[in-house]
Image (cartoon, rainbow, N blue to C red; front, side):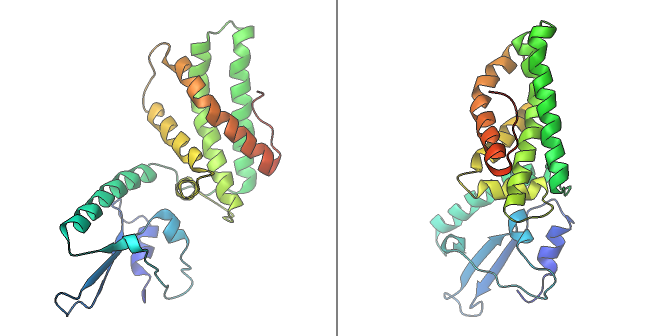
Length: 225
């Protein structure tokens, strides 16, 4: 790519629409054209060195559109998934945080969750009430885990948009992206009576994985088992 104007435009969030780069080889040879495409994801844009005037774009085999109905339909289905993914990522924070700031989020979330659990004995709160109080804290805890994972991958000041996409690319951390997506869905709704308590066993496995992640990578102990 001889000019970085297009990816730079996407990086500056000039538009909320997803950016798709198309490259056509042999455009003047009818029947011999080859069409390639690349989604300008947050992760891809962050991989570009904008201090240089150009970059090399490598295309995967599945990023070629053939002149067949099946290939075009397959591309349209991928485009639908990209639109849905891009819409979700745009709702995530683009604020960059350093390691100390992320660790403070972890510890604040942990204190909040532990206090909520303690109210079962001290104030006689029901498990459903405690679960309602914990759910927002779980979102922040998952957010911090994603940011720490991004930092661990070499990004000194990650943001949630990048961290979410990076976690999706690795089977070992994809659970973090899935957990955040589920919590983001709940965050937009007020659970009915009893529903919050029913959600907690479902989320316990995610909490345990996050607890192990913090302990194994950064020796941070959270949420007593």
